[in-house]
Length: 195
Image (cartoon, one colour):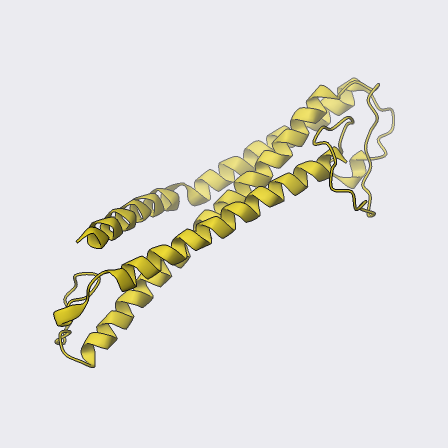
């Protein structure tokens, strides 16, 4: 029940973060596209085009290109942030379960099992009072002992370290570029909104 409570709390935080971040991105796009004045043929973002963007219908085309570029950039940022945040949140959840398993390596603590039946109660305490298996093979461990439980914890600790290292290798450089892009977009939007 404690694991289920941790999963529910983690999912709630993930949903709150996602919805609030999507709302902020939506308002950022709206602010950049609508609040910035576009009279006299000016555009929200200064740019040069191979055509005269001050006259209609080319002004509308240039405006649509800029609005699409801003919306696509924000959508990319939201997608990447959402994905990395979700990965991080569920790795943190697994680390919390692993922390509990390290504390419950002694055989006096019961070994949990997987259950396909979920009880509808919403007020589970987020405390775990048993040794939680990470795979089905760990449920019916023969000759259960402190050493076997501790080795299981070490194996899953190494697995989580490998996952975190893989995430850093995949997302490290792109996240740095995305951080620079996000910062510049926020600064430019604030600067243009203040004009």
